Image 1 (cartoon, helix red, strand yellow):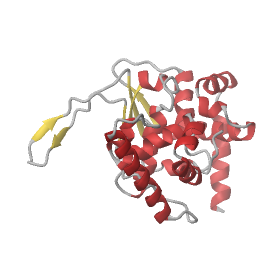
Image 2 (tube, rainbow, N blue to C red):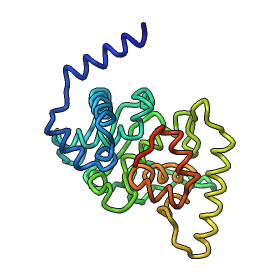
Image 3 (cartoon, rainbow, N blue to C red):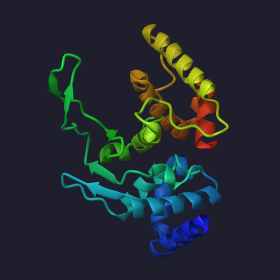
Length: 251
């Protein structure tokens, strides 16, 4: 009965708030991970994007104006990671705040000595536990221009990571996935890449991935969807774990 009610609600939302064909075609042209999908997966992604637009509050700030095409594009990028997982993986939060460009978070940080500091670091995106996702629209538009980069997918990966607590690179795994294998693959790859970084080697992934296990998962997720063949070639074990988690083979 629950599934019937849920499916009825989905059909009702899609029927009442359809994404116009022209807007959808525009989003596919501008979102490479979506463009690579087969027709049936694109149709499923379109439904998820519709539900995303109806369930989330997209809030431009600082005078930024987003038109319908922009909103559909944002939703399309955001729903790529949950194509095979479902909209319920984004439950528990509502707002997406969009700045025109990179931003500085206005919140104090306390160091180990108990001293309060104000951050002066420019960010392209940020995800809060059960709070909002914050994005730089300039960086959203840069998705795919630099190999493997996609700030929306990055922040959505953090949201998935936080489903079972703090972001730590260990999202809730599916029943048939082995937690020990996940931990071994990510930790051993992390250690190897850190050693290569110390030796001055060129890394096969954005060095920002080595800031923390949470960033490693988020950056690897970006590459999984944006440049999957590269990730599979250079970090095959990580690719295999992400393939199992996202339940997708993105090329």
